Amino acid sequence: MNLFFAITFWFATAVITLGLGYKVRQYWKTEAPLLIPTTPAPTTQGGVIMRMIREVTLFESLFKSNKWIWILGWMFHFSLLLVLARHVRYFQEQPWFWVTLVQPFGKYAAYTMILGLAGLLLRRIVVDRVRYISSPSDFLMLIMLLVIGFSGLIMQLFDRPDIIGIQNYFINLMGFKIVSLPINSALVVHLVLVALLLIIFPFSKLLHAPGVFFSPTRNQADNPREKRHQPSWVANMPSSNESAES
Ligand code: HEM
Image (cartoon, rainbow, N blue to C red; front, side):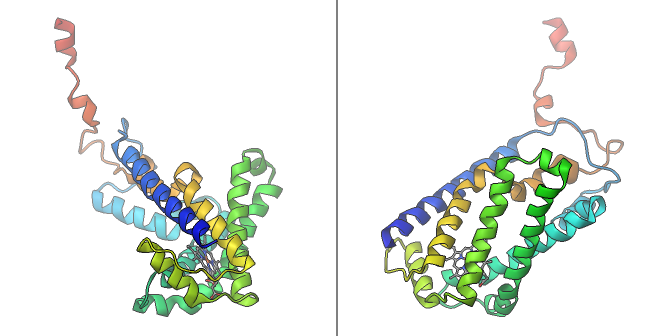
């Protein structure tokens, strides 16, 4: 198990780092040929930054379109943030101040994370038109996150693992050293699914996390009168006169 999890997590870390790097580079280099901000949209760059901040912190556009999905989606994502902040301690000998501060919040966030995920899963099952457009991966992704959450909660409540031992294992893993990992069954389920999550992240819908920043409908200013929108490849094209002459 010590070796199995070492190899799995080294591999998973490499996949998510390289995979995400590759995808973000691809998004970065993809031209947006047309100016298509969703209106009403800000007319300045500063306004776009504020809109993006509201979008990723409050899920503003989702709030405007559907309150139920907004409640469930926001609850899940905000809880996930707290849970992940609580997990930072597994990778530090001396946790940062804010990591210590967030511990009790992260603990209760497990419940709201599971509640949000369960609601989102229920929606895909009971709402006809959502079920119609749902693929197996949509369900599997939610179920995977739910099982990660449940196995974490089981450890928190019933099957207490040796937290210091787990911390020691992961800190050593970061220095490419393998020490003993004190396992229990909930931890095995938890870690196998977390590794799977890291591996599929760059190939799945979870890419919406970095992707939102590259969405032209969100990151463009509504300024076609002030500024001509021209993708970089247009500047390198021969002008229509030149091509007519040749
Ligand atoms: C290598 C990465 C991870 C390790 C070593 C790890 C380990 C643990 C451990 C030991 C617990 C029990 C905490 C306690 O008893 O106080 C726990 C709980 C939990 N984990 Fe993880 N986990 C990892 C990644 C994740 C990820 C990526 C998620 C979410 C997608 C997650 C979600 C949870 C939840 C919801 C809980 C219950 C709340 C809590 O106690 O923090 N874990 N995890």
